[in-house]
Image 1 (cartoon, rainbow, N blue to C red):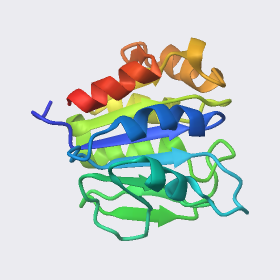
Image 2 (image 1 turned 135 degrees about the horizontal axis):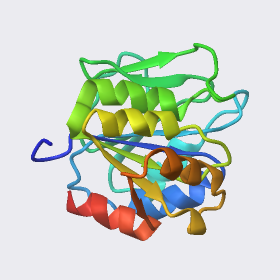
Image 3 (image 1 turned 120 degrees about the vertical axis):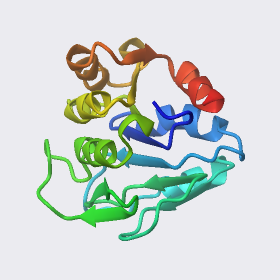
Image 4 (image 1 turned 135 degrees about the vertical axis):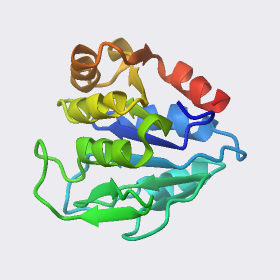
Length: 187
């Protein structure tokens, strides 16, 4: 594993706003690792996630744009109705390919592409959600030598997503939201 992680990817669905509100605002302004976030949302509505977190966080927060180079100290949210991918040259790619598990953006698509780009330098986090998107992607991250964290399903708004991730990835670390925030603060 690299001395320092090079990127963090986070996936969440039902209950995402509350879960992310524990983790992202706790990060100090000196946090230099890029964070890419997929939250399941209706395709026909404008997302206000970047706006909401811009007001809460000390890091720069934006909605991801196609072909944009990934910068440290920035939180990127996937725009509605686009898959968010990481290219091997560490730029963002937005795709309108078919939904995966009824979701576009898909957590699996982000995690798998980021695993290819960052390998052991990646931390992947599966949070609350009501399906199993993120499970296959988390497996890809762990298989590439990265680190996997999963929200404790007992505290999740919707436990299906973290439970699925734990079943398929028993080598991932199961943590409370506060413990995940502290883990990131210390990397």
